[in-house]
Length: 132
Image 1 (tube, rainbow, N blue to C red):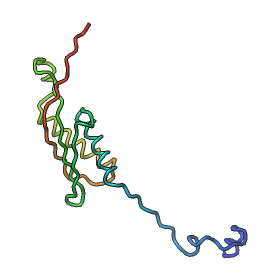
Image 2 (spheres, rainbow, N blue to C red):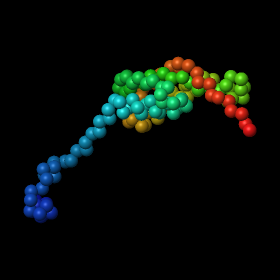
Image 3 (cartoon, helix red, strand yellow):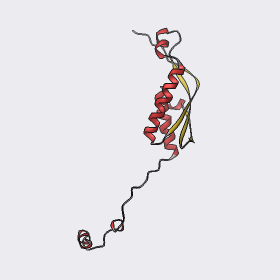
Image 4 (cartoon, one colour):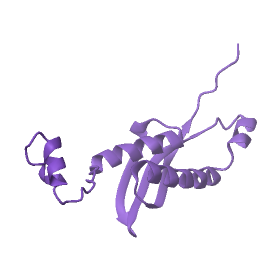
């Protein structure tokens, strides 16, 4: 068997990794700042705001990571009763956003997200546009 291996490599000894050793997969390191940017982008998209309006803090928690998000929340114009009714309550929207962000961030980053906290720092009222 050694003769066949040497013949394949042109008579030279085989590379050290193939001589009696099992090749092991390597590992990938993702820096904290990359995870920070990913979480900021995912949070901004889920909340419907620009990434510059989102502040994210990530900390270790219970074998995973806890994500704390601070952002203004877009709301419909309060004089538009149909839009306000369609948007639902703020609390319902935030609970849904927490759940979806927890799953999405876990899937993208590959780490367990044990907790998502959202702090609403203000409101962004969308402009009403007139139909022409």
